[in-house]
Image (tube, rainbow over all chains, first blue to last red; front, side, top):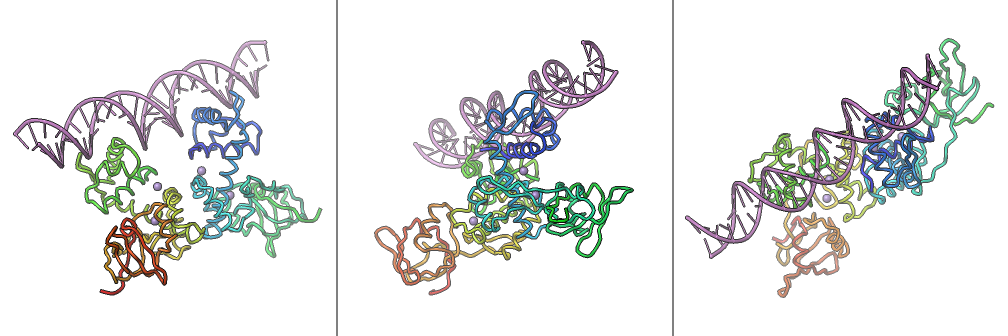
Length: 220
Length: 220
DNA sequence: AATTATTTTTAGATTTACCTAAAAATAAAA
DNA sequence: TTTTATTTTTAGGTAAATCTAAAAATAATT
Ligand SMILES: [Mn+2]
Ligand SMILES: [Mn+2]
Ligand SMILES: [Mn+2]
Ligand SMILES: [Mn+2]
């Protein structure tokens, strides 16, 4: 049984490991809004518990057990997000902090039944995949919108940035999950992208385009 | 802002204060499965925060703020219990421990929307009243089944014992909330009570009869 | 009223999750 | 390959919530 704090560390390490194989102390500290010294302390504890492999100065990797635990927390987090949006009418930019707390409720039964109640959803409100009760989930094949070329079309199926400001911005522009888009033009001047969305046209900055994930379905 | 622990103390004090005006250290310790010394420490902290009035050796009482905080936690606890039973199909004897955790999730928005989602329920699965968002609730007028006389009738509207064993027992006997009952007989030998329930007859011990709450609706 | 029993509080420790400041190891630059 | 910069760890300490053992206050009995 892990403490809330341990669970948060495991989840953070898991997410960081999606980008770099060896997760560094400083990266964890930044993500968790804490100090590197505190991270070292916690890493030692997690290593003692067999949840991470740790060699001094070489960063950490999750063990099988550690990874499974992390995936389970991710599963809970995403299921709760679906609940908040689908059932309680939260907006997709409002759910993260509450889910951050709810993910730590310890009851297998609860999460099984919640999953069923929600109709066994495959993705959360941000398009991130929800692991099933065995921790399995399809590794979704996304392309960043910024990588599309003029003429390319696709469907918005995810975002790689979960800040409320970013999500609110997308919402205002009508760039929500499931929407069909096509690239009309890429502005020479600032690299901003002109998108065709249903009938209207929308212009988004490079920065925004980087964080929209597209499942490509045409024109190439 | 209170810690989970502080919230649990406040709730415990609130419940104990329903029975005795001055809540004693030992009573809190027993209820919270901790030692009296720990309780004294916590009481001092709660007193410093203005949540309880405390005179050494004289026990504690909740201040207005403390009472409001406690009621808010009770509200959350009971709403989550309704959610678990109504939406996730938990049995009434399975919800307590999970609700014990869920009640500490800190989000006013969450609980408002949950309340609405559930249809603003007035009572939890055990018949206990759910305070509204201003902390107000009707003080329900119950009679213990054991106090009824032969011939008296009424409706089961609550229980004063929440242990899983007790609730499972009631369920098996068909003595669930909303059921109409009538007292057929009280056995001389052991004081057990013979109840008419729909068409069948049920015999319950004095101990069980003490913890069933009836809203009397007839024959007197 | 004195004695005994119960309740409550204090004193001193422990564990968890943090912190700061300084030392040690590793990586990057000159 | 030194020197410098960055990263990571250690050393020593704090605050929250607990504990045990012992002392103090209150309540109950003789
Ligand atoms: Mn969390
Ligand atoms: Mn999400
Ligand atoms: Mn609780
Ligand atoms: Mn209840």
